[in-house]
Length: 117
Image (cartoon, rainbow, N blue to C red; front, side, top):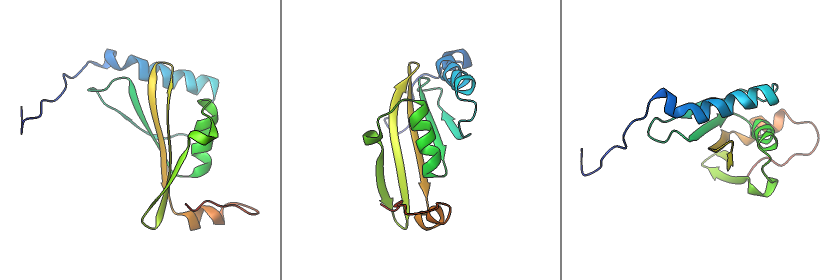
């Protein structure tokens, strides 16, 4: 125990099976879903962090996980913007987010788009 905080007992890779199965299921049912940087902790084996780099990719994940649009939160982070949502699917808590530069994203969108917080 360091500094009064006791680390949760680590699990085995088999203990992380729910996250791995959820990702495999999404890969099969949504093969065009954008790839991501994933974080999985052995201390919290039923939670998955999904880091993306654009609002459109967050939208794709939102649709794949059947999350209502009003559950997506947009916030300013300095000069950048952040989109995030959380959802439980396949017995796993998904934490999906993207931090991005609104000006760069607006350049990639045709027509009128409001991507800044």
